[in-house]
Image (cartoon, rainbow, N blue to C red; front, side, top):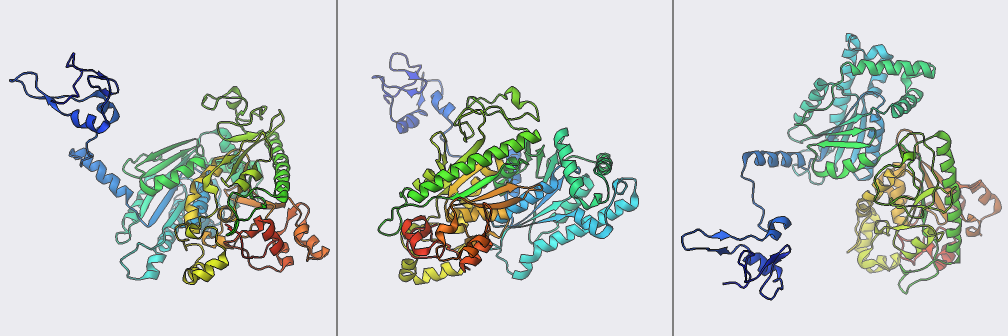
Length: 626
């Protein structure tokens, strides 16, 4: 008989809340406890055995292996989930919503993000087809009683749908009768229209289901907006930019748009088909509802929809400052800032404070909504009185670290800024421009991992591993360093970083390294991600990305330390033509330098030795870069 006994065997031991105890009062090892917990005890000869199960196994969860479900209902649910989780290389995202609900904003953000992630993504805007075929239209064109107009609207929707499927088929057509599509790039089509009736949506669903040989996944995304202030802003943005309202005054255009919305509201049917996969976005991400969403869609699209907002905050990107130290095989990752690096840090602090205050004044002047960021508990989720109304101006800022990771300089006139750096000492020291600042360190922002080649010069790699180096030259984006990463891997690592940036409502400062910043700039520009290795990112420069209406970003560059000291070989006229005020004109500067190529894998300019060797930009051996 085991020494480990059940609680009701009085006098021999006891069972406390954490598990069984022996006669000495000590608990047995966990493996013995599990083994003996199912031992049957017999109270009398004529009674069946009773299994004694300690409460700890009940509350901690069963230790028995999972088995296939037996109930027919559960089986059906699992089969449905399996079907919806299937990894289709083609996906159609159908937007649903009344006019002025931000559908085109969502479409452009989806296109930007998914292309950056490496998929083929394209928006098919039915309104563009309608304007091309029918010209501009007033509210009468969208009335359900206008049969001719209704027929024309169906025609243009069908044309857009046909073009969408043709585009989706293009990779398959190029590959011919190949049966293995594992290597085919994912394709995502965004069908941007009101799609306001069940009949229209069922037509789209049937067209997708008809693609049997090369299945097409389908997800509906409905944008619901009932916030009057947000609707008013959306309407005014639409009438100021849409060709439909050309020649009208703004007030005339607003009346026409509101009449158009009323026509749609008469026939509008919200998404409620629980057999379909759909996501509902309320008031541009204040609330999300998902139905039958599994697999990659839930992993990628839902976090993005929750993050995207129409705030005006800028994002500042900056390379870590110059360092003094070099290791024997390149530059040490533990190197600290040189005198010039410290100068960049100080000037970066001045830049961030000035630009943050300018942004704060702009927001205050517009009466935009900003939450209170005063002295609050990090875990307190109750809104303060200043958070309850739109149009409330900034309250005083006193804290230096807030629950959201936002740092502010002490004082009632301070402005907020979220500061993030890599975990490399040179990056943290560059970002930590003031003792009162709190800098969030993230390993996601660390340089590209060169694996077995860490610390080696690119010239040495080329000499010792010529065959691998040829692969790198042929495809620098997808070639993985042995035991390390490729740029393609780096983009996946940065996915959560981009979502974090997008969800911020205050300015963000990012201090990182060439490889990371190349990927980030490619996202904000909307440029092909597989060409990101060609993007130049100079030292001692801040790249500012500001959101513009419609979901894209506007880029500006500011040289914090004059490039004059890096261009001793250039005449004054060449330098002057490359500079415009405080903003650096990179195209003119590169032309003045006579430079056509940029370092892709090296980062020698971080070191004093590297800077002396290259005079600013040209690639040289030495330094671990990226």
